[in-house]
Length: 418
Image 1 (cartoon, rainbow, N blue to C red):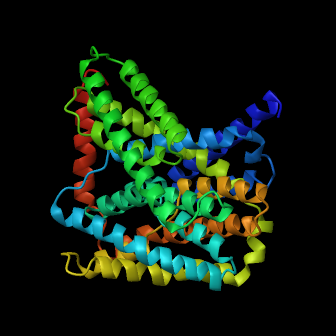
Image 2 (cartoon, rainbow, N blue to C red):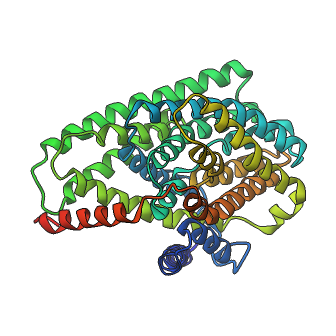
Protein backbone atom coordinates (compact mmCIF):
# COMPACT_ATOMS: atom_id res chain seq x y z
CA UNK A 1 0.00 0.00 0.00
CA UNK A 2 1.46 3.37 -1.01
CA UNK A 3 1.97 6.12 1.62
CA UNK A 4 -0.45 8.33 -0.29
CA UNK A 5 -3.16 5.67 -0.19
CA UNK A 6 -2.47 5.08 3.52
CA UNK A 7 -2.81 8.78 4.27
CA UNK A 8 -6.07 8.91 2.34
CA UNK A 9 -7.41 5.92 4.30
CA UNK A 10 -6.78 7.61 7.64
CA UNK A 11 -7.98 10.97 6.39
CA UNK A 12 -11.30 9.56 5.18
CA UNK A 13 -11.72 7.51 8.38
CA UNK A 14 -11.10 10.37 10.81
CA UNK A 15 -13.18 12.80 8.74
CA UNK A 16 -16.09 10.35 8.63
CA UNK A 17 -15.88 9.88 12.40
CA UNK A 18 -15.71 13.61 13.06
CA UNK A 19 -18.64 14.20 10.73
CA UNK A 20 -20.67 11.59 12.60
CA UNK A 21 -19.85 13.32 15.91
CA UNK A 22 -20.88 16.68 14.46
CA UNK A 23 -24.16 15.29 13.16
CA UNK A 24 -24.82 13.70 16.56
CA UNK A 25 -24.35 17.06 18.30
CA UNK A 26 -26.80 18.75 15.91
CA UNK A 27 -29.41 16.01 15.74
CA UNK A 28 -29.29 14.57 19.26
CA UNK A 29 -29.00 11.05 17.84
CA UNK A 30 -26.62 8.64 19.62
CA UNK A 31 -23.08 9.26 18.42
CA UNK A 32 -22.16 5.57 18.41
CA UNK A 33 -24.97 4.79 15.97
CA UNK A 34 -23.83 7.49 13.55
CA UNK A 35 -20.19 6.39 13.89
CA UNK A 36 -21.22 2.89 12.91
CA UNK A 37 -23.22 4.14 9.94
CA UNK A 38 -20.31 6.32 8.80
CA UNK A 39 -18.08 3.25 8.71
CA UNK A 40 -20.61 1.34 6.63
CA UNK A 41 -20.82 4.30 4.24
CA UNK A 42 -17.07 4.61 3.59
CA UNK A 43 -16.30 0.88 3.68
CA UNK A 44 -16.95 -2.29 1.73
CA UNK A 45 -20.72 -2.01 2.15
CA UNK A 46 -20.81 1.54 0.80
CA UNK A 47 -18.46 3.73 -1.23
CA UNK A 48 -15.44 1.44 -0.85
CA UNK A 49 -13.11 4.29 0.16
CA UNK A 50 -11.62 2.48 3.17
CA UNK A 51 -10.34 -1.09 3.28
CA UNK A 52 -8.95 -1.88 6.77
CA UNK A 53 -7.09 -4.95 5.54
CA UNK A 54 -4.85 -2.62 3.51
CA UNK A 55 -3.12 -1.87 6.82
CA UNK A 56 -1.83 -5.45 6.88
CA UNK A 57 -0.31 -6.62 10.14
CA UNK A 58 -0.29 -3.05 11.38
CA UNK A 59 -4.08 -3.21 11.77
CA UNK A 60 -3.84 -5.43 14.85
CA UNK A 61 -1.20 -3.21 16.46
CA UNK A 62 -3.05 0.04 15.81
CA UNK A 63 -6.36 -1.34 17.02
CA UNK A 64 -4.74 -2.86 20.10
CA UNK A 65 -3.02 0.35 21.17
CA UNK A 66 -6.14 2.47 20.67
CA UNK A 67 -8.31 -0.06 22.50
CA UNK A 68 -5.84 -0.10 25.40
CA UNK A 69 -6.23 3.68 25.65
CA UNK A 70 -10.02 3.38 25.75
CA UNK A 71 -9.91 0.68 28.44
CA UNK A 72 -7.32 2.63 30.45
CA UNK A 73 -9.67 5.60 30.43
CA UNK A 74 -12.49 3.31 31.55
CA UNK A 75 -10.44 2.02 34.46
CA UNK A 76 -9.35 5.57 35.27
CA UNK A 77 -12.96 6.66 35.72
CA UNK A 78 -14.31 3.40 37.15
CA UNK A 79 -16.28 4.12 40.30
CA UNK A 80 -18.11 1.53 42.39
CA UNK A 81 -19.57 3.50 45.29
CA UNK A 82 -21.52 1.39 47.76
CA UNK A 83 -21.90 -2.33 48.29
CA UNK A 84 -25.07 -2.50 46.17
CA UNK A 85 -23.26 -1.46 42.99
CA UNK A 86 -20.32 -3.77 43.68
CA UNK A 87 -22.63 -6.72 44.33
CA UNK A 88 -24.69 -5.96 41.22
CA UNK A 89 -21.64 -5.76 38.96
CA UNK A 90 -20.09 -8.92 40.40
CA UNK A 91 -23.26 -10.96 40.17
CA UNK A 92 -24.16 -9.78 36.66
CA UNK A 93 -20.63 -10.54 35.48
CA UNK A 94 -20.53 -14.04 36.97
CA UNK A 95 -24.03 -15.07 35.91
CA UNK A 96 -23.67 -13.65 32.40
CA UNK A 97 -20.34 -15.43 32.08
CA UNK A 98 -22.18 -18.74 32.49
CA UNK A 99 -25.64 -18.04 31.05
CA UNK A 100 -24.61 -15.91 28.07
CA UNK A 101 -21.76 -18.21 27.05
CA UNK A 102 -24.01 -21.27 26.99
CA UNK A 103 -26.96 -19.51 25.38
CA UNK A 104 -24.79 -17.79 22.78
CA UNK A 105 -23.23 -21.12 21.83
CA UNK A 106 -26.62 -22.79 21.34
CA UNK A 107 -28.17 -19.85 19.51
CA UNK A 108 -25.23 -19.44 17.12
CA UNK A 109 -25.25 -23.15 16.28
CA UNK A 110 -28.98 -23.87 16.07
CA UNK A 111 -30.24 -20.53 14.73
CA UNK A 112 -27.32 -19.05 12.75
CA UNK A 113 -25.90 -22.36 11.54
CA UNK A 114 -22.33 -22.00 12.82
CA UNK A 115 -20.31 -25.11 13.64
CA UNK A 116 -19.89 -25.87 17.32
CA UNK A 117 -16.30 -24.67 17.58
CA UNK A 118 -16.96 -21.43 15.66
CA UNK A 119 -20.17 -20.91 17.65
CA UNK A 120 -18.16 -21.14 20.87
CA UNK A 121 -15.75 -18.48 19.62
CA UNK A 122 -18.70 -16.26 18.67
CA UNK A 123 -20.29 -16.67 22.09
CA UNK A 124 -17.09 -15.56 23.82
CA UNK A 125 -16.55 -12.61 21.47
CA UNK A 126 -20.02 -11.14 22.09
CA UNK A 127 -20.01 -11.97 25.80
CA UNK A 128 -19.35 -8.45 27.02
CA UNK A 129 -21.17 -5.19 26.53
CA UNK A 130 -18.83 -2.61 25.06
CA UNK A 131 -17.62 0.18 27.36
CA UNK A 132 -16.67 2.06 24.20
CA UNK A 133 -20.38 2.20 23.38
CA UNK A 134 -21.99 2.18 26.82
CA UNK A 135 -19.91 5.01 28.33
CA UNK A 136 -20.61 7.68 25.68
CA UNK A 137 -24.22 6.51 25.44
CA UNK A 138 -25.03 6.82 29.16
CA UNK A 139 -23.22 10.16 29.26
CA UNK A 140 -25.18 11.50 26.30
CA UNK A 141 -28.57 10.46 27.63
CA UNK A 142 -27.65 11.58 31.20
CA UNK A 143 -28.52 8.25 32.82
CA UNK A 144 -28.76 8.54 36.60
CA UNK A 145 -26.73 6.51 39.08
CA UNK A 146 -26.40 3.71 39.95
CA UNK A 147 -27.27 2.28 36.52
CA UNK A 148 -24.58 4.27 34.69
CA UNK A 149 -21.90 2.97 37.07
CA UNK A 150 -23.16 -0.60 36.83
CA UNK A 151 -23.31 -0.66 33.02
CA UNK A 152 -19.84 0.86 32.60
CA UNK A 153 -18.27 -1.44 35.20
CA UNK A 154 -19.91 -4.54 33.72
CA UNK A 155 -18.36 -3.85 30.33
CA UNK A 156 -14.92 -3.17 31.81
CA UNK A 157 -14.98 -6.43 33.77
CA UNK A 158 -16.31 -8.72 31.04
CA UNK A 159 -14.62 -7.16 28.00
CA UNK A 160 -11.12 -8.51 28.79
CA UNK A 161 -12.51 -11.86 29.95
CA UNK A 162 -14.46 -12.32 26.71
CA UNK A 163 -11.50 -11.33 24.52
CA UNK A 164 -9.07 -13.67 26.30
CA UNK A 165 -11.54 -16.55 26.33
CA UNK A 166 -12.31 -16.04 22.63
CA UNK A 167 -8.60 -16.19 21.79
CA UNK A 168 -8.17 -19.42 23.75
CA UNK A 169 -11.20 -21.01 22.08
CA UNK A 170 -9.79 -19.93 18.72
CA UNK A 171 -6.47 -21.59 19.56
CA UNK A 172 -8.38 -24.70 20.63
CA UNK A 173 -10.19 -24.70 17.28
CA UNK A 174 -6.92 -24.30 15.37
CA UNK A 175 -5.24 -27.08 17.37
CA UNK A 176 -2.77 -24.84 19.21
CA UNK A 177 -4.32 -25.89 22.53
CA UNK A 178 -5.30 -29.41 23.53
CA UNK A 179 -8.23 -29.84 25.90
CA UNK A 180 -10.26 -27.66 28.22
CA UNK A 181 -7.66 -27.85 30.96
CA UNK A 182 -5.22 -25.86 28.86
CA UNK A 183 -7.99 -23.37 28.08
CA UNK A 184 -8.72 -22.85 31.79
CA UNK A 185 -5.04 -22.51 32.67
CA UNK A 186 -4.54 -20.07 29.82
CA UNK A 187 -7.55 -18.00 30.89
CA UNK A 188 -6.41 -17.71 34.49
CA UNK A 189 -2.78 -17.02 33.60
CA UNK A 190 -3.53 -14.33 31.02
CA UNK A 191 -6.18 -12.59 33.08
CA UNK A 192 -4.20 -12.89 36.31
CA UNK A 193 -0.90 -12.00 34.68
CA UNK A 194 -2.43 -9.01 32.93
CA UNK A 195 -4.04 -7.70 36.11
CA UNK A 196 -0.81 -8.09 38.12
CA UNK A 197 1.30 -6.35 35.47
CA UNK A 198 -1.33 -3.63 35.17
CA UNK A 199 -1.43 -3.03 38.91
CA UNK A 200 2.37 -2.77 39.04
CA UNK A 201 2.51 -0.41 36.07
CA UNK A 202 -0.31 1.68 37.52
CA UNK A 203 1.52 2.05 40.84
CA UNK A 204 4.76 3.02 39.10
CA UNK A 205 2.94 5.56 36.93
CA UNK A 206 1.12 7.01 39.95
CA UNK A 207 4.40 7.49 41.81
CA UNK A 208 6.03 9.06 38.76
CA UNK A 209 3.11 11.47 38.28
CA UNK A 210 3.29 12.44 41.94
CA UNK A 211 6.97 13.30 41.68
CA UNK A 212 6.89 15.13 38.35
CA UNK A 213 7.38 18.87 38.67
CA UNK A 214 4.07 20.73 38.17
CA UNK A 215 3.53 21.51 34.50
CA UNK A 216 0.88 24.12 33.62
CA UNK A 217 0.17 22.43 30.30
CA UNK A 218 0.14 18.90 31.76
CA UNK A 219 2.14 17.93 28.68
CA UNK A 220 4.84 15.91 30.43
CA UNK A 221 2.29 14.06 32.57
CA UNK A 222 0.26 13.13 29.50
CA UNK A 223 3.33 11.95 27.58
CA UNK A 224 4.49 9.90 30.56
CA UNK A 225 1.05 8.32 30.94
CA UNK A 226 0.80 7.34 27.28
CA UNK A 227 4.38 6.06 27.23
CA UNK A 228 3.81 3.76 30.22
CA UNK A 229 0.43 2.59 28.90
CA UNK A 230 1.64 1.68 25.43
CA UNK A 231 4.79 0.03 26.80
CA UNK A 232 2.62 -1.96 29.23
CA UNK A 233 0.29 -3.09 26.46
CA UNK A 234 3.13 -4.03 24.12
CA UNK A 235 5.00 -5.98 26.81
CA UNK A 236 1.88 -7.84 27.94
CA UNK A 237 0.96 -8.81 24.37
CA UNK A 238 4.50 -10.03 23.75
CA UNK A 239 4.55 -12.07 26.96
CA UNK A 240 0.91 -13.25 27.17
CA UNK A 241 -1.27 -12.46 24.12
CA UNK A 242 -4.54 -10.67 25.01
CA UNK A 243 -3.32 -9.93 28.56
CA UNK A 244 -2.85 -6.30 27.52
CA UNK A 245 -6.59 -5.63 27.85
CA UNK A 246 -6.99 -6.55 31.55
CA UNK A 247 -3.64 -4.88 32.21
CA UNK A 248 -4.90 -1.59 30.73
CA UNK A 249 -8.04 -1.64 32.88
CA UNK A 250 -6.06 -2.48 36.04
CA UNK A 251 -3.49 0.24 35.40
CA UNK A 252 -6.20 2.83 34.83
CA UNK A 253 -8.00 1.74 38.00
CA UNK A 254 -4.86 2.28 40.11
CA UNK A 255 -3.93 5.60 38.53
CA UNK A 256 -7.50 6.84 38.92
CA UNK A 257 -7.16 6.62 42.68
CA UNK A 258 -3.94 8.58 43.01
CA UNK A 259 -3.98 11.63 45.30
CA UNK A 260 -2.09 13.71 42.77
CA UNK A 261 -2.32 17.37 41.82
CA UNK A 262 -3.77 18.28 38.43
CA UNK A 263 -5.45 14.87 38.35
CA UNK A 264 -8.73 16.15 36.95
CA UNK A 265 -7.05 18.05 34.13
CA UNK A 266 -4.93 15.05 33.11
CA UNK A 267 -7.88 12.69 33.33
CA UNK A 268 -9.91 14.98 31.08
CA UNK A 269 -7.15 14.93 28.45
CA UNK A 270 -7.03 11.14 28.60
CA UNK A 271 -10.80 11.02 28.16
CA UNK A 272 -10.64 13.27 25.10
CA UNK A 273 -7.94 11.05 23.57
CA UNK A 274 -10.10 7.99 24.29
CA UNK A 275 -13.01 9.67 22.51
CA UNK A 276 -10.73 10.36 19.57
CA UNK A 277 -9.72 6.69 19.55
CA UNK A 278 -13.39 5.67 19.44
CA UNK A 279 -14.04 8.17 16.65
CA UNK A 280 -11.25 6.55 14.62
CA UNK A 281 -11.88 2.91 15.48
CA UNK A 282 -15.62 2.62 14.94
CA UNK A 283 -15.63 3.79 11.29
CA UNK A 284 -12.42 1.86 10.56
CA UNK A 285 -13.72 -1.48 11.83
CA UNK A 286 -17.25 -0.99 10.51
CA UNK A 287 -15.73 -0.35 7.08
CA UNK A 288 -14.66 -4.00 7.03
CA UNK A 289 -18.28 -5.21 7.00
CA UNK A 290 -19.65 -6.39 3.68
CA UNK A 291 -23.25 -7.25 2.84
CA UNK A 292 -21.91 -10.44 1.33
CA UNK A 293 -21.01 -11.67 4.81
CA UNK A 294 -24.31 -10.58 6.35
CA UNK A 295 -26.81 -11.73 3.72
CA UNK A 296 -26.10 -15.52 3.95
CA UNK A 297 -27.04 -15.41 7.64
CA UNK A 298 -30.62 -14.56 6.74
CA UNK A 299 -33.38 -14.71 9.32
CA UNK A 300 -31.43 -17.29 11.31
CA UNK A 301 -28.75 -14.72 12.12
CA UNK A 302 -31.32 -12.04 12.98
CA UNK A 303 -33.22 -14.49 15.21
CA UNK A 304 -29.97 -15.44 16.93
CA UNK A 305 -29.18 -11.82 17.82
CA UNK A 306 -32.76 -11.07 18.87
CA UNK A 307 -32.65 -14.10 21.17
CA UNK A 308 -29.55 -12.71 22.86
CA UNK A 309 -31.17 -9.27 23.18
CA UNK A 310 -34.72 -10.17 24.17
CA UNK A 311 -34.29 -13.43 26.09
CA UNK A 312 -30.75 -14.16 27.25
CA UNK A 313 -29.80 -10.72 28.57
CA UNK A 314 -33.06 -10.11 30.50
CA UNK A 315 -32.94 -13.61 32.04
CA UNK A 316 -29.32 -13.20 33.14
CA UNK A 317 -29.99 -9.77 34.66
CA UNK A 318 -33.13 -11.04 36.41
CA UNK A 319 -31.18 -13.88 38.00
CA UNK A 320 -28.28 -11.61 38.95
CA UNK A 321 -30.42 -8.95 40.62
CA UNK A 322 -32.55 -11.23 42.80
CA UNK A 323 -32.43 -9.86 46.33
CA UNK A 324 -30.71 -6.61 45.37
CA UNK A 325 -32.33 -3.25 46.19
CA UNK A 326 -33.12 -2.35 42.59
CA UNK A 327 -36.65 -1.48 41.51
CA UNK A 328 -38.41 -2.96 38.49
CA UNK A 329 -37.63 -0.01 36.19
CA UNK A 330 -33.91 -0.27 36.93
CA UNK A 331 -33.95 -4.01 36.29
CA UNK A 332 -35.84 -3.51 33.02
CA UNK A 333 -33.28 -1.02 31.75
CA UNK A 334 -30.33 -3.19 32.81
CA UNK A 335 -31.94 -6.10 31.02
CA UNK A 336 -32.37 -4.12 27.82
CA UNK A 337 -29.17 -2.15 27.29
CA UNK A 338 -26.26 -4.34 26.18
CA UNK A 339 -24.64 -2.92 23.01
CA UNK A 340 -21.43 -4.48 21.76
CA UNK A 341 -18.49 -2.26 20.89
CA UNK A 342 -15.01 -1.80 19.50
CA UNK A 343 -13.25 -4.69 21.21
CA UNK A 344 -15.92 -7.06 19.88
CA UNK A 345 -15.46 -5.73 16.34
CA UNK A 346 -11.66 -5.78 16.56
CA UNK A 347 -11.50 -9.34 17.89
CA UNK A 348 -13.94 -10.58 15.23
CA UNK A 349 -11.99 -8.96 12.38
CA UNK A 350 -8.62 -10.29 13.53
CA UNK A 351 -9.91 -13.78 14.36
CA UNK A 352 -11.66 -14.07 11.02
CA UNK A 353 -8.36 -13.40 9.26
CA UNK A 354 -6.62 -16.14 11.28
CA UNK A 355 -9.41 -18.64 10.58
CA UNK A 356 -9.36 -17.89 6.85
CA UNK A 357 -5.57 -18.30 6.74
CA UNK A 358 -5.94 -21.66 8.49
CA UNK A 359 -8.59 -22.76 6.00
CA UNK A 360 -11.34 -23.15 8.63
CA UNK A 361 -14.85 -23.09 7.21
CA UNK A 362 -17.21 -20.51 8.64
CA UNK A 363 -14.73 -17.66 9.18
CA UNK A 364 -16.77 -15.25 7.07
CA UNK A 365 -20.01 -16.28 8.76
CA UNK A 366 -18.40 -15.69 12.17
CA UNK A 367 -17.39 -12.15 11.28
CA UNK A 368 -20.76 -11.52 9.66
CA UNK A 369 -22.70 -12.69 12.71
CA UNK A 370 -20.54 -10.65 15.09
CA UNK A 371 -21.02 -7.49 13.07
CA UNK A 372 -24.73 -8.23 12.74
CA UNK A 373 -24.80 -8.39 16.54
CA UNK A 374 -23.01 -5.04 16.77
CA UNK A 375 -25.27 -3.44 14.16
CA UNK A 376 -28.48 -4.60 15.81
CA UNK A 377 -27.50 -3.95 19.43
CA UNK A 378 -25.94 -0.55 18.77
CA UNK A 379 -28.65 0.52 16.35
CA UNK A 380 -31.75 -0.70 18.17
CA UNK A 381 -30.61 -0.19 21.75
CA UNK A 382 -28.74 3.01 21.00
CA UNK A 383 -31.82 4.62 19.48
CA UNK A 384 -34.21 3.38 22.17
CA UNK A 385 -32.03 3.94 25.26
CA UNK A 386 -33.03 7.54 25.92
CA UNK A 387 -36.79 7.15 25.28
CA UNK A 388 -36.87 4.04 27.47
CA UNK A 389 -34.83 5.64 30.28
CA UNK A 390 -37.07 8.72 30.13
CA UNK A 391 -40.24 6.62 30.24
CA UNK A 392 -38.89 4.70 33.24
CA UNK A 393 -37.81 7.89 35.03
CA UNK A 394 -34.11 6.97 35.08
CA UNK A 395 -32.58 10.17 33.66
CA UNK A 396 -30.84 12.85 35.70
CA UNK A 397 -33.50 15.47 36.64
CA UNK A 398 -33.17 18.76 34.68
CA UNK A 399 -32.45 20.79 37.83
CA UNK A 400 -29.59 18.46 38.81
CA UNK A 401 -28.21 18.62 35.28
CA UNK A 402 -28.21 22.44 35.36
CA UNK A 403 -26.53 22.57 38.78
CA UNK A 404 -23.91 20.05 37.64
CA UNK A 405 -23.15 22.05 34.49
CA UNK A 406 -22.90 25.26 36.56
CA UNK A 407 -20.52 23.60 39.00
CA UNK A 408 -18.31 22.42 36.14
CA UNK A 409 -18.27 25.94 34.65
CA UNK A 410 -17.29 27.48 37.99
CA UNK A 411 -14.52 24.93 38.40
CA UNK A 412 -13.08 25.73 34.98
CA UNK A 413 -13.28 29.50 35.46
CA UNK A 414 -11.73 29.37 38.91
CA UNK A 415 -8.79 27.18 37.86
CA UNK A 416 -5.96 29.42 36.58
CA UNK A 417 -4.39 26.48 34.76
CA UNK A 418 -7.38 26.03 32.42
